[in-house]
Amino acid sequence: MKILYFAWVRERVGKPEEELDLPAGVRTVAELMGWLAGRGEEYAHAFENPKVIRAAIDRTHVRPDAALAGAREIAFFPPMTGG
Amino acid sequence: MKILYFAWVRERVGKPEEELDLPAGVRTVAELMGWLAGRGEEYAHAFENPKVIRAAIDRTHVRPDAALAGAREIAFFPPMTGG
Amino acid sequence: MRVRLQREDFDVAAEVARLTRGRTDVGAVATFTGICRGSEAGGEIAAMTLEHYPGMAEAEIMRHVEEAQARWPLLGVTVIHRYGRLVPGDNIVLVATAAAHRQEAFAAAEFLMDYLKTRAPFWKREERAEGGAWVAAKEADDAALERWARPARPAAAE
Amino acid sequence: MRVRLQREDFDVAAEVARLTRGRTDVGAVATFTGICRGSEAGGEIAAMTLEHYPGMAEAEIMRHVEEAQARWPLLGVTVIHRYGRLVPGDNIVLVATAAAHRQEAFAAAEFLMDYLKTRAPFWKREERAEGGAWVAAKEADDAALERWARPARPAAAE
View 1 (cartoon, chains in turn yellow, purple, red, cyan):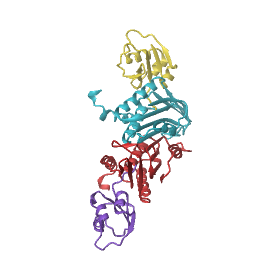
View 2 (tube, rainbow over the protein chains, first blue to last red; view 1 turned 180 degrees about the vertical axis):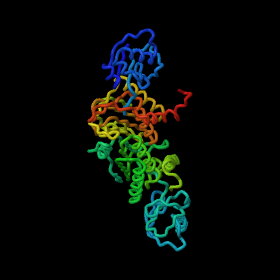
View 3 (cartoon, helix red, strand yellow; view 1 turned 120 degrees about the vertical axis):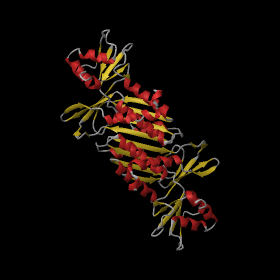
View 4 (cartoon, helix red, strand yellow; view 1 turned 180 degrees about the horizontal axis):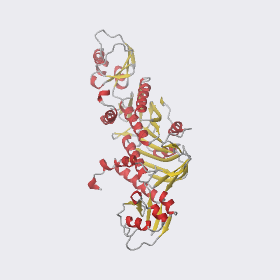
């Protein structure tokens, strides 16, 4: 699955995107954040407070309990500050 | 006293402004409208429904019960439709 | 603050530039442009003539610009109102407000437009195929103005 | 309707002209221009970099422009959002709405700005003397967005 990071999530993870194979037990956005947090120090830092991180599946905002099934692209980022 | 008319009040009276000496009994805006209405057919037509006519004394909106004392210029006009 | 009544057209970009040029404290500029429409209430309009009360119109607009400045922390306000004969597509009025943040800029622009519609001494006469007619004031416009009376000015303070 | 994300500056007058040119049904054009400020929360800002999520940003803005068009009878909408590095005084965002009457034009412009502030995938990083820092989202902006959820969309319809 293609995973994108933006703003300080990107800075902490150290890359803007990557392609990852998810284990079968990772079924929701929240579970994916938990799994990513275990992939190393930089990920642990990026996802240390998952409550403040927003996610989008296939370019649509989703909640942490959203299912990953069928997703092509998932993105993690801080609250938006455009406009 | 200088009296100004705008929009359809001006059209009905037939002039944009005039200088008039008011009788002593005319003390308020409402009394002035009543007195003007008696000055001829064109005035009667202009002031036939005084409730819809707005007034300003010295370029400030006033209510019908406003006193004329000290006024230099009084204007009569329909509800405003600017903007 | 800049209030102008004129026959001539105005240039929105020039007025916005005037509000922001050479300064870095403005974060938000809201503008409203009112334009002469080609039809109203189903009928075609060939042209419109705007009559105003010279002297009072400037003074009244200025007074309301000052009121807007007292209500919101504005960094600049421009109001330009045209008079004379206008045809469909012509600009009628411009309100432009500058502030640090968007809420103030929007609120002040709406306040000034609601005011101009109902309290500024201007009168529109439309030219239609069946003849000319003065535009009647709309109750909806009075209602729009009233919303500003409630929150910011308690009745006891009037 | 016209949505653009670009590094380059925009021209408010050209965008307003595009909304009104050759038509006589537009009676109201509201615009909002967001500008990079030289200080925020007391500190001086040397520059700001706007990051966005390409593809999602366009799609999300487009979706909200369509929602604005469903809510109000709009005759045209333009949204231009810049990205990249901007310095104080630079334009950031333009929202321009055209309608027959002012209420719709103002409401749609405010709706779109409230949306862009909180839901469009853009992130601002400020450069200050003491270093760079990502701008924190403001609770006031979330509150501003919420007001649109209540009157126009009953909970049962969501």
